[in-house]
Image (tube, rainbow, N blue to C red; front, side, top):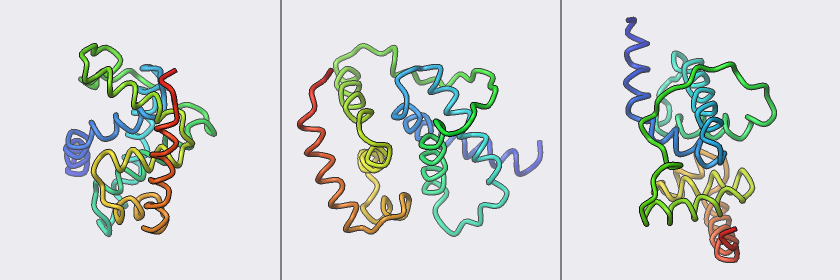
Length: 158
């Protein structure tokens, strides 16, 4: 294996849960989540050798993952081979997972941009990091999160 391929494999192993979480937030179908996951990997690979390290690699991965998922409806799907992620939130049935599914259900009904912001917030990114990833001001992140939380409170679990 080439050095670049080894580095990429290590990065994917480190951030696969992050990538999967983003993909999960943009689909309710496990096969589509897997397709999105593969699309993200393809996009990460395409840009990996040109990543200059001007931002944190995790921030870059979030941005690529979010952009890939948001634009997936506008582009043709890439033919894919199923991957085993080792994570399947569709199968777990314990109380914590049920609560997470209910939250993700509500979040999935938000607009794509709001979904991205709340997902980053749930992953404990600072307002500054969220602003850098999605390309808005820190103040705008604060205002949007307040409105998103209010919208989520008003939703039912259907």
